[in-house]
Length: 169
Image (cartoon, rainbow, N blue to C red; front, side, top):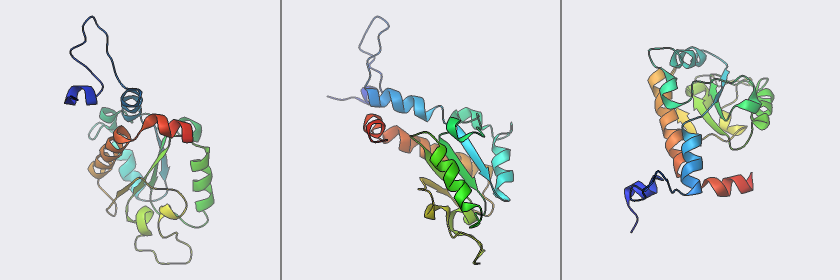
């Protein structure tokens, strides 16, 4: 019989200060509570991304306050704003330099679908160059929407098999 407590990785029936857990549960708990974003602030959505780091919205509550501007130290890329074809190779290069496992949040209408720009210079969605895990709608989206996307990404990470992804990466 599997209870809800053992699914989360903690068995309260074990005594003596010993915690028994599955490797997947422990690894995913660590990944979930220590996501380090790589901010790709390309347009007006970047202002809302900056607001999430402030005291009013406090992204630190979710373990993602350490914004990394080096792709080798980040595991969540937040693409905030319009991606042009001129910028697309650099976005892809930064994504490729991130260590695995890595995730992507497309923030705003422009990053998700090109937004109102239907021109030769605008990429019609960042998912054409990098795989996107969570989309945030809005133009620009509110900081609360980004926090909601982060919580959705955390629940995705919590459910995925961590050891299989380690072997395939």
